[in-house]
Image 1: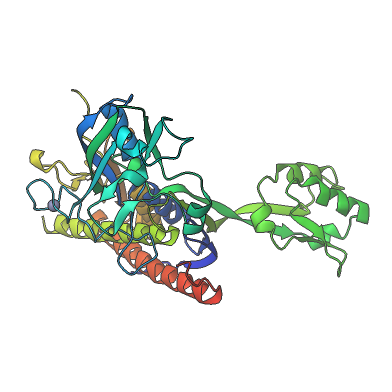
Image 2: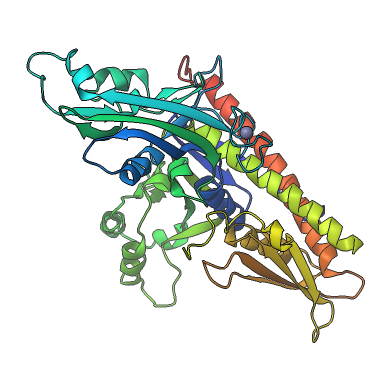
Length: 324
Length: 125
Ligand SMILES: [Zn+2]
């Protein structure tokens, strides 16, 4: 293992639904692999099979089945507040030994809403208005698995809505079905994608040429600072030179203006730039936002484990190749 | 009726005898060969290519994903002397990457644990 790298991770901000971190001392290929795996290969649960018993709503069976598939299904292990990694807790249904399905590879949801029954419990002013069937009406047969409605209890308490709307029904209508959730990956269908956002951007390396800056007047320095739309530069009050803002790495997006403008200030064309901003090749700022199926940190962790398993598998396959 | 299998992009078609990796020696270039990875894409292709290029005994490493609806990649490797076979450098590249991933898992775990300790997030996690 002569060419191994030892990357570093620094957390910037972390919440159940979103996290930001810096990945450093590795290269784009690793950052991009991690990003691609989080988007397409982290296993989650999603409704994949629906048995309709009665559907007299205005939407047809396929339409409702599709909508059910898109509802985020959350696995929350016993004694945990986290949206956890279902990989390991469940088996991919194609790998399971059962005949059709079993609790190891699937979760069943029952839904049965009849307008006329539900209407009797509604208030006077709501009476006879269309009834919205939501993800809240899905009754799971597994205590650790439920549709993800809101990010937190607080958000739920403040909301007017009961959950993810599926279909509206009116007098005389009924929807009765059984939905089966299975584990899968987004390569098969994007309903299994755990992330709303998984991106990285390059850390900006901001270099200030003190020698060159010293040839500028105060007004000229201010002009350079003002031309940057992200305002990544400021006057250094101690030295009177220009310095990068403390949060410049986060603010920095577009630096073409800065690059173009400083050419006009040079005494000779071949002079060095006053300020250069370059994309780092070994430092990346990741943003991961969850759809609600699992905590952001779990998505990253699960992604890394998926990568590890894949590499172990491929290493074994390459070994087999040697023996042939 | 002519829809491809939903699993076509990630599950080996074992019924038709599909295997994960097929290797073929290059007929014109010495110390070179092509690995065909079935059911893989840029995720692994570019990762392997970049890791191989860090190895001084690799003269050439490149991969090709012919089309988004074609579910394999071809990885071509040439080494710079006959004592090291392409399969050897590939094997050590994968080993390095596996170790790097292991390291990353520990780093990430430590970083999140530390963050939680430093930022009082009682009840949030
Ligand atoms: Zn089963």
